[in-house]
Length: 114
Length: 116
Image 1 (cartoon, chains in turn blue, cyan):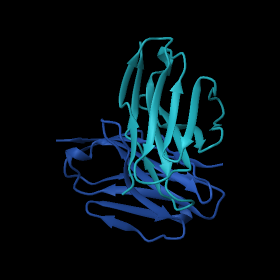
Image 2 (cartoon, one colour):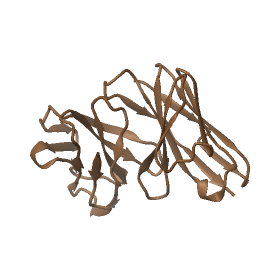
Image 3 (tube, chains in turn orange, blue):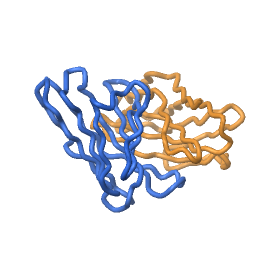
Image 4 (tube, chains in turn yellow, purple):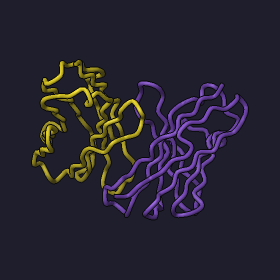
C-alpha cells in the first residue's frame, strides 16, 4: 500500500530564512512518481515538481530545491530565502507507475513571518 | 499547458438540495478523471475515479448514491452531491490525466460547497 508522511504539520519561519519540508513515502513498486504541490489560501493546487523514481538527481528551481533520497524513501523540499508569498500548505504526493491515483500526504502549513 | 476547469468555484445551497459540479479538460481528452474531497485543514482524499463511458470506481467509505459521478464525454466529468447536508460542506477538487502513464496530472481550481 502507498503512504506519504509529512510529519511537520505546521512550520513558521521569519522571512528570508531557509526552510525544509520533509516527506517520507512508502510503496512496494520500484517505479513511481513523486510530486510536490502548493495550495495557497485560494485553494487551487499549484504543481511544483514531479520526480521519477529512477532519477535521483536533486533539482533546483530558483529558490526551490528538492532532495530525493531513495535509500531513505524521502523527498524533501527546501525553500531558500523564504518570502511571505511562500505561505501556503504544501503537499507531497506519490503515484505508482501504471496507477493513475495520487496518494497525498497530510500537508505542511508553512507560514512566513514578515 | 493542459488546463482543467471546474465550475462552480463556490456554491451555497440549502440542506436537502442537490448540487452538480463540473470538471472539464479544456485542451486535452481525459479518459480518466479523479474527484477529491478536502475538509478544512486536512489533506485531499480520493473519492472516486471517473472513467469515460463507464461507471465510476468509488473509494471505500464513499457513498456512490450520495455522490453521483458521470463521465459522459472525454472532456467532462460531473459530480452531483445529492440531498446535500451540512456535513457535505467541503472543498471538492477534480483532476484529469493527460495520456496514459505519463505522470501528467492536472488539477481543477476546486469547488467550495457550503450547505446551510
